[in-house]
View (cartoon, rainbow, N blue to C red):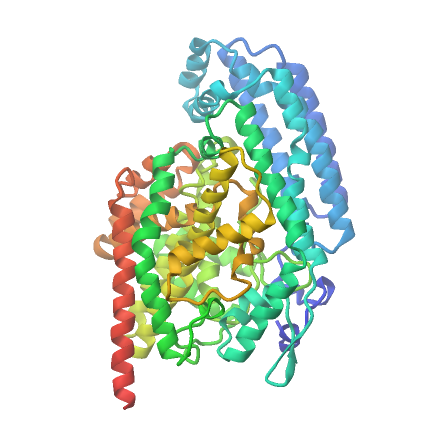
Length: 609
């Protein structure tokens, strides 16, 4: 990627194609994509004709489940092809049209096939038990279907709800369109010069900018423009949470929390504990970290715009995509030869989209269409912190590859409570590897600071605060209260005040942070980052102490897919999350890292004197 790409916001057609993902691995052409949609429609039509009203015996049920999997594979590939094209460039009208047409078709097709699980729930349990005994590989799926029995409506009603699926996704579509297509930032002035400002370069570069005037001016300009869209995005978010509350009532749940947690296979005690313990016990450690940044950078006041500052920005090396490969292979290769081969495939065969361009989705994610291979979106900024992000997303990729190798698509759905464990685990492995490469104090401080600022700040602070804020919003919704944009601003600011106390000055614009994150349209997702990292922290410590036996246990859980509940998943990896001990141990570990940062900083400052 060229220096020019960093100086201006490029169109998708202008970026280096070598650093883009190759979606032709899903379908070589749009024509193949449209043909697959026709195939999908035919499969569903035949499925309905064959099985509707005929799920009476175990062999028929098993045949139906196997044919259902074939439908899911085609649907997943079509959906990935459409959505990933939109993610790479939301300004492209052809991609938008393809995605909208597919979404519309899927709404109708899902409505047609919704009879399947409704009728399964009408089958006598004796017959379902026979099916489970006859083919254990499908027992996990059938048991999971039965969990939803108290919350499943009549087949006719379920068909209507399925048909409305595309409409229920509209709030998220509005949010993404406003953010990535309509929202355009003007350049801002600092140091007597004009500077480029985009969503991607603000979150990937300017928030970390060492120069205080540039960093804070960027924050002001970013916040000012974001505020112009506050009511559009606020209305979309209000519609999302109102829709979820209505669905919780329609589906006979006691609260919107129970409705949203059901798919995660955890109860509210695990959810609430994650949020309450971190607010009480993590906050004091992070306030110390904020004060350390203030001291090291000689800031008169520590503002919200300064929290992403690196402790030693002059030391962080610039790194290319090619240079990152060596770190990835050496740090993550510990997970096995086949895992290492997967990493090489991903990095050499265009599984990953590294470039920055107008209309591209912000942040990073991994999508794993069954029967193809994972795809990773990231926006490379040439900073070493991106190696941690890349390792994170490759954790999702490795998890899906091992799961798909051992299970069909009905068993590959790990609970969101634990889904971030494989990704954050790779960040911990990267940190463990870097710590072994040098004992030089400044390098050691940089590595520890990277663990805090990249791994724990992002997952244990950023997403935790989102989760805590989200719970406060849903509490009001559960009480039947209407919430709107001003409420979202107020609640987010109150959440920040509670966490940061007097250690951070919450400058104007901090309250708008909720507008930057798409996770609010994905249920109770944000808190799960800290849940997953709690598991991976414990397992990474096991690997350091026990070596290969701990690695072997970890590989087993990665291969288990969705056949384990979060408690079972963690237990198989040697962690008991039925208690709060792993969470408190992780918080104490973070505190010990900050202790080391303070000590190393004092030693390095003493050397200068």
